[in-house]
Length: 119
Image 1 (cartoon, rainbow, N blue to C red):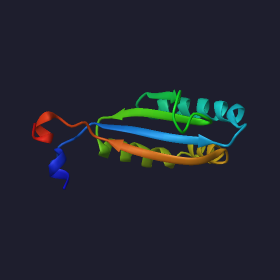
Image 2 (cartoon, rainbow, N blue to C red; image 1 turned 180 degrees about the vertical axis):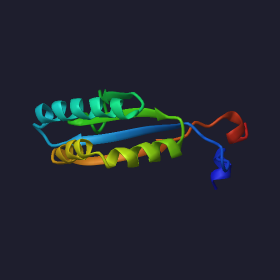
Image 3 (cartoon, rainbow, N blue to C red; image 1 turned 30 degrees about the vertical axis):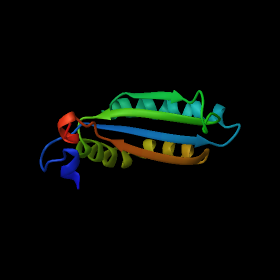
Image 4 (cartoon, rainbow, N blue to C red; image 1 turned 90 degrees about the horizontal axis):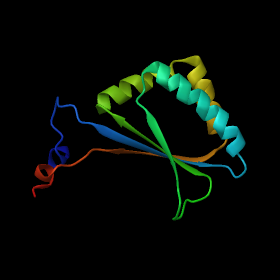
């Protein structure tokens, strides 16, 4: 199935990671300092830049944050996330964030060329 979408064994494919977090109502003041700490630690650990977006219209306008990052490969993302999960300060901040999160969804996207789609 993955061959259908241009995945080839041993070939690195850029990945777009989109994380959608919904927070408890009234928790924005708590979220900011936690995200600031995570952002600082992530930069120091070699994570790619994360762009953050709020919803202007649609179902998830309230208390929802989208965090988008681009990775050189799925393997690079998995390796760095595994390494970061062993850092004490990083996991403590993630646990604090989990206390104010209602839901957390992650999408991993791969760009498709016309060739991948057969057009």
